Length: 280
Image 1: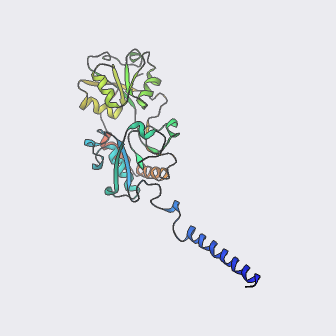
Image 2: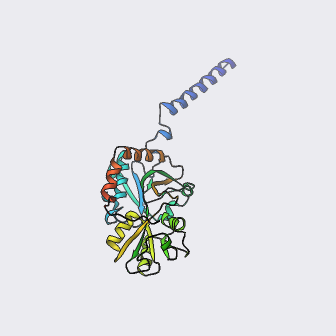
Image 3: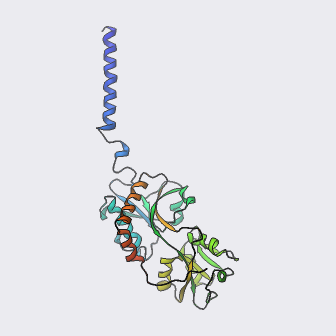
């Protein structure tokens, strides 16, 4: 075959290859970024994580699949906005600390009262906030905290909280205690310490404090609410760092906030008519 003909065939082949590649990128098979399942742990499913034990009022009877409880209800509302039916939501369990550690995740998002902080954002992503909580001090009646009505009255007491939590940070920043606070691996361990008189008082987020004093810590009461002390306790859905789902999940939450659904869920599960004194 003459050289000009060979050159013509080569150019034609190159052009055909370029057209084929262009077709794949635009009109053929969808690119990865256009795949509706891109970023999800399991195609066609929404994998949601919560605590190894999930408590009221966030999850009822430790059964998030029921959709009962504040965070269970929020998760299913987000799932609906993302286009998932309830039966396509799969639940997994994680510890609090394991989920905020750097590294790959076995869930699409985790809902477990995670406060959004700049430090945590270095290892994970957060959605926009779905709730803003305050912190409260809980004590046993007849103990050292009886009669305390100010931050000054807490300074010489032994306070406890869950390690790594906003409750622990609020003790340091709001109370500035003279006695080193005792920190525990979980709220359950901190509650046990309070019941065993190892600490004088326990700091919990306010919804948990309401439930704790009303249901599972006998003879307990809410001493008062702590000031925010520069720590905005806004809770967000936690995702893996640079997750392709972060924007989608945030958009879903923003829609729930704008259409009033989030407020309805909050009122149903966290509404309370009880007044709590702000300690100053």
